[in-house]
Image 1: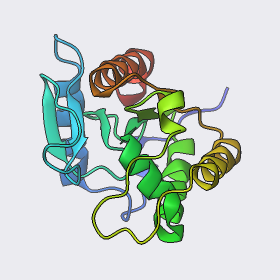
Image 2: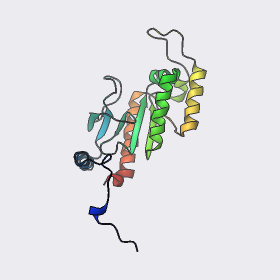
Image 3: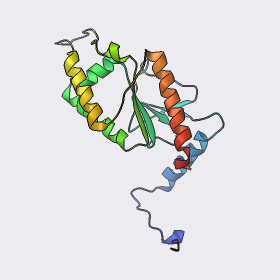
Length: 186
C-alpha cells in the first residue's frame, strides 16, 4: 500500500492556485449546496431582454455557455440559441468559429447542451431579412454547417417549441446535472 504524501510536501503550481480564489470557490460551492437546490448562473454577456431568468440566479462571466450552476461552471453549462441567433451564428465564418470554440470547450465538461428556442421544423425555415442584411439566409447552407458541428463536436441540440419551453428544459437539464455531479465539487 502506497503511503500518501504529507500535505506540506504536495506541490501546487502557483499559477493555478490562489488562496483568495480557493476561498471564493469554497463559498460558491457551499452556497450551491444550500437547501432549495442549485443557484443558477447567467453569463453577463447575455443581452438584456434576450435569455432567461431563474428564481435563484446570479449574473457573472462564464467561459463556456450562457447558463450554469454556481460552483459548477467548469462541470456543466447550457448554451441558449434563438432561431435568429442560430442562423446568425452559423452564417458567418467568424461567428461559426466562435461557436465551434464554444462547443470544443463544452466537450471537456461533464454536461453541455445547446438549447434552441424553436422546433427543428421551425429552424428549417429561415428568419426574415432584417436591418442592413445584404442577402437572405440560405437554409440549406445553415443546416449543412449545423450538421457538421453536430458530427465534429458530438453534441445533440435540444429543440423546443418556443422560449418558455426552452427555459423549462434548460432549468431541468441544469438541475439534473447538479444532482448528478454535485459530489464533484465537494
